[in-house]
Image (cartoon, rainbow, N blue to C red):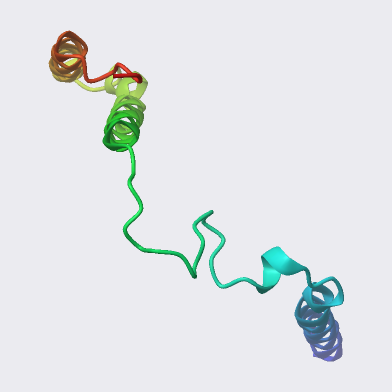
Length: 116
């Protein structure tokens, strides 16, 4: 019982020390970037009607789409251990074919061209 109390006391002391250090450490070096309310690159005092590139957002959405495709294909090796592994392979192939056709369509329409 005494050892448990000692271990809990040590854990509490370490937690308090880390909390205090993490509270005071960032205040030692304030600079202009840390004191500004926005860190996204936009001027907070300027106009809110800045033009932006629609192509940038289109390519960002396509990147997210294909990034999620990889996440969907990650469990595919474990699909080989199912009773019918060809079903999981067929579903994965259909997802890949559908996304490849979408990419080819987007490419043919000129959606991946960065410059106009």
